[in-house]
Image 1 (cartoon, rainbow, N blue to C red):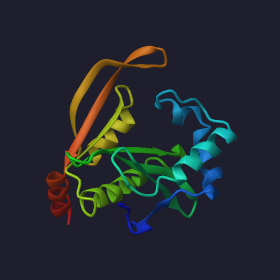
Image 2 (cartoon, rainbow, N blue to C red):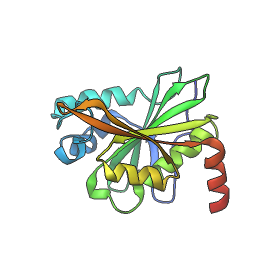
Image 3 (tube, one colour):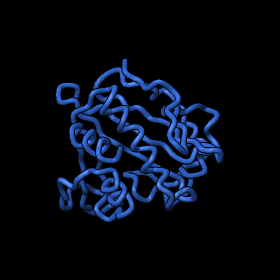
Image 4 (cartoon, rainbow, N blue to C red):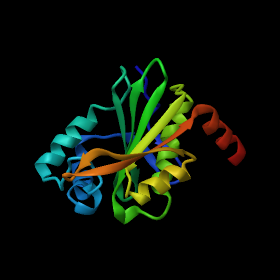
Length: 189
């Protein structure tokens, strides 16, 4: 079993496992059309649907086997403002997929980038990942910009590669290697 030492603290944030007590904060963004618009198959959630989501995320506190998801609440003094996650995609290839969702009221201040950086530091450091990738809808410019800010390179644009909202959609794929991540951190430090 692999899990960070909780909590993970950054300059402005605390990352920790989701709990059932986080329902109100999570529902505050899961119920918003502007947040879920880029999520495959997701519409604004009811409180009951958010309870199911929070219950599932509360079990995602460690990576026990390939395919598992580690989901962390991103908290400030205002409560839970978003989540970051790593999905363990391949044990043999030491690869994971990064995901994130944040309440838009907390956007524009670098908090999502700060949280994702902390999770990637753990993934490439203690967990020993070789490669992390992330995907987004081809029109999701904010997510693509965040991946670029993290130092991820765009590796692909899969044209009309999946159905989204009843139509064919493009998907962008970004990635970063462990050695690139460590070099970026060394240059910044």
